[in-house]
Amino acid sequence: MKSEKISINLTPAELGQIDLIVERGLYDNRSDFLRTAAQKLIENHPAEIRQFLEPEHLKDDVFTRLMWGIGIFVMTKDEIENMVLRGTQVNIRTIGIFTFEKNITADEVKQVVRSCKVRGKIIASDEVKAALKEIE
Image (cartoon, rainbow, N blue to C red):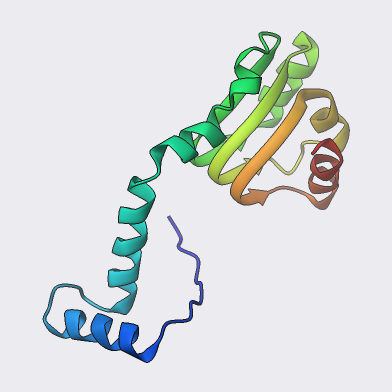
């Protein structure tokens, strides 16, 4: 998966300690050290992540599907058309990337998507992104 670049501010002492650990060969470089540190901290908060992905208030909604997970997800034109025909609605909860195929219309999204919370990136047409903002 493609990684995103971020910037952080560290004190000279913190950076010096990281450099020392890298020089000792425990990590390949600063990025490797910081990525590992972030992964370990994320592992310490499974309840917060689970609460976002499976919110209690949506579990009682038996009429609306919950599409959730961590990773890369794609909603296809066929999938959304079938949901429109069946009158199905979805609550989307994703950490990662959620893609709406380019040929999906804003009207279809408004009919199908009841809520959409993506922590990461949404890939969609400008029309669909605008419809999603109206839904939130």
